[in-house]
Amino acid sequence: MDTLDVIKDQIGSNSVLLYMKGTPQFPQCGFSARAVEALMSVGKPFAYVNILEHPDIRAELPKYANWPTFPQLWVKGELIGGSDIILEMAQQGELQGLVEEAAADAGQ
Image (tube, rainbow, N blue to C red; front, top):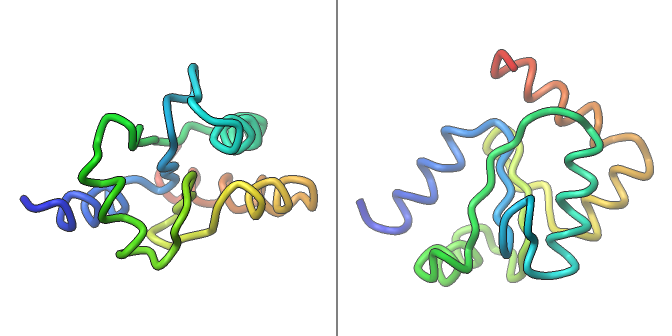
């Protein structure tokens, strides 16, 4: 599979997916740390890809998503946005419902 196929498979296979720098347990940038904190506060599982370990994905995803920065949150195959959007949605109570609905649809 080429990199674009890998990205499409990851997005299609995970109802909630965060492309980030580092891991949820050890984020490698402040923006990824804040995004993880907001997602973890929902209390539902989510998948992640550490783009620092996958330079091919790090290079290709911004072109595919038409979104230049990381982290990137994808829910049910749709790009939600980056750290600022994730935090704003969390503060407004929108992230909880979105992630819970995606988890319920995935049987989690």
